[in-house]
Length: 199
Image (cartoon, rainbow, N blue to C red; front, side, top):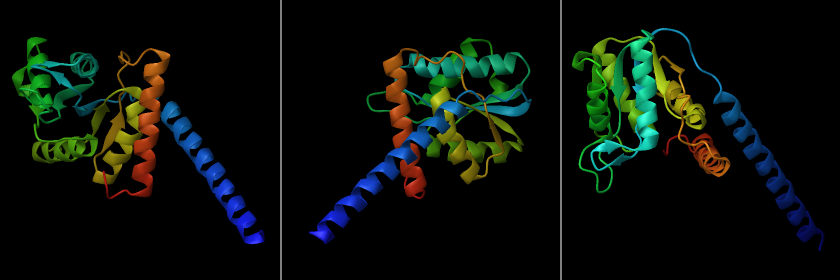
């Protein structure tokens, strides 16, 4: 009976500790979502999101629009779009971003993209290759606010000299959509901290 009681008590303590840890991660994600760099940089790296047929999804579109504003305001000299071809999509996220930026008047020479990555870590790995090839120094990472904590952790591991620039027009506006996004990011950040080699 004593062994069973001790085992039960240990499991309760582990459960409480895990819950506290997850709350801390959630708090970090929320706090980090408000951080945005005002420094100039060589490029904005736009993390991929869904494409609907040949057009960026509303979420991806707002990330692209944010990068376009950074370019137009002179905060970056170039834009790097990332993302491969999703299920049933006709073009890659990177190509969709490029086409959208061209239609908004961004010069072709200021647009770079990759089209093979399938997740955030790969987005940044492929962006790093472009950054190296172009001889860029510092870049700004563009994504939705709750995505930034994990994205910046990945960027640091990969060795990208980056600062955060979350979009101010995220499509995740309702309480429930933000909570779903937050829970998703807590899960992925926890997974990354436990098993950093498995994205």
